[in-house]
Amino acid sequence: MRNLLLLLLFIFLSSGCSGYKTTEDYVFPSKIEKAKYIKSYNQTLKLWDVPFEETDVTTSYGTAHVIMSGPETGESVILFSGTDASSTMWFPNIKEFDKGYRVYAIDFPLEAGKSMSSVIKLSNKEIGFFYKEVFEHFHMKNINLVGISRGGWIATFLALQPDNKIKKMVLLSPAQTFGGINNIVKVLSGLLLKVYPSHKNLNIFFNSFSYYPDKINGLFKEQLYLAYKYGNSRPRLLKMSRFSDKDLRSLKIPVMVLVGDHDIMNSEKILEKAHELIPNTETAVIKNAGHFLSIDQSEIINKKVVDFLNKN
Image (cartoon, rainbow, N blue to C red):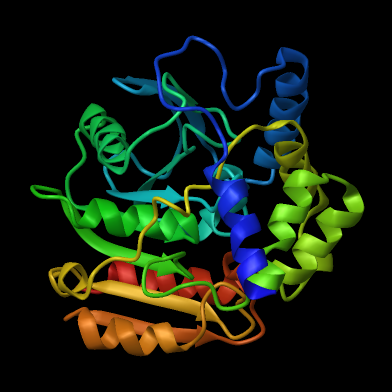
């Protein structure tokens, strides 16, 4: 049974065309359907209870959509969202994150959101260049990374690149960073929603990934539903190979790793591995939190992240 589930997950994640230049919107082939999604995205973005601005940055690999808030003179904090959740997912956190920091939330270009790739697939190396060009566009120095789930893997990958300007990194239940999937049966609720998008399967998904699914704002739930219903994105778990022990030991920056006690993606054992391999690391288990820990326990997450960033 487990092998069958893994095979189904492999087929789902590896589907799609080979990379090539395109002027088409690969994620949203239908302009009408994309308009519906963008309307929902904008509705969720209204939950950001802070002044913000949106801009597009042209890169060699497409357009990066960036949402910015906080003082322009503050240190940079980059937010990397989970798969298909987009930058809007940080609505419970942004009000605390941007106090004293210039926050940049960047939509991933090959998933639902407002960024748009000029290629159907991006290699890990190209993803690194994509973000590097965005960082250079804003002349960033002393960069702090905050990533959740797939975004945590991307943050770690960027922190391992040579000549980066990363100062600190926060990983919120990072996918494929320290280990494999903790509960593959529940994780496959994402596959169920992708293949058979319906509000019933949406509820199954949130019941699996969140400890408090009924408390998640309905606007965000609807946006994620439309991302699965209309979007043609492909999670990149197959290319998100686990980092080697040597790679993780090479991280010299301060790193904080947080997981929920009801997380279906990561078990608490990854915290032991983080302490073992990363020289300067802090960890914690967040009680009554699932994989959506930044939403399930936003007040606790906000305080821990801000305190970590403020620490000398």
